Image 1 (cartoon, helix red, strand yellow):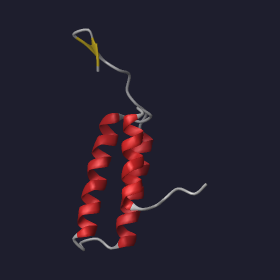
Image 2 (tube, helix red, strand yellow):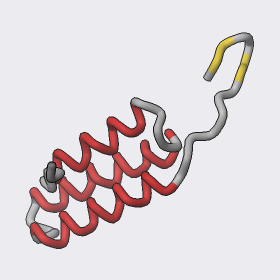
Image 3 (cartoon, rainbow, N blue to C red):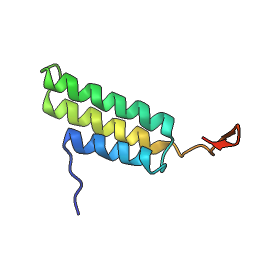
Image 4 (spheres, rainbow, N blue to C red):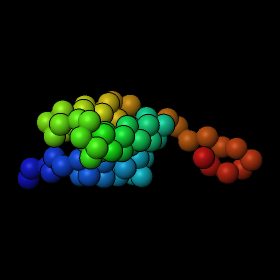
Length: 79
């Protein structure tokens, strides 16, 4: 099965990684914001299709580099 390589699909995958806690949430959140910026720049014509896809795929790869940190307990609540 081949992965979809559209900008929204890449953004959805990064959001899914964050939601499933498979990667560091801090990094995945920042990567999701970066991909959102890439999508906006592409929509405004500031980035070409190939460049935007390359940058989004690189950002997805960065999100996958960092494992999640252990959960913290604060005031009896798991964060």
